[in-house]
Image: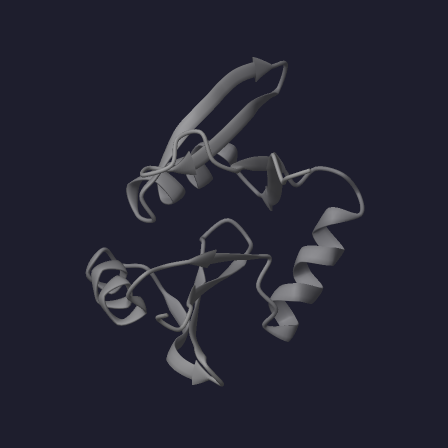
Length: 130
């Protein structure tokens, strides 16, 4: 068994797609119209057959209060691994990405938290080198 897809709730699928592809560097895997919304999944550019991230609309009644509570408490809705957090932090800052937490050591890992502009905080993680 393996993870095939995971989702993050977004306020606007088009805006989220532009941010996640244009800033974070993901690529579109599927973009299928489904009435008012789209089945819109992304993958890592260097792993197009890997786990997909579904940009899920935030319209269900339970989602807005959930997202608001996570944002208020500073809890990321997703976590992505990077090889060099300091370099990624600099690259993303140059692209205008807003960080809520600059890179910081958390035990053996290093983390940072950014605002995805679509109602979520996203944690970036650099794991220790083997």
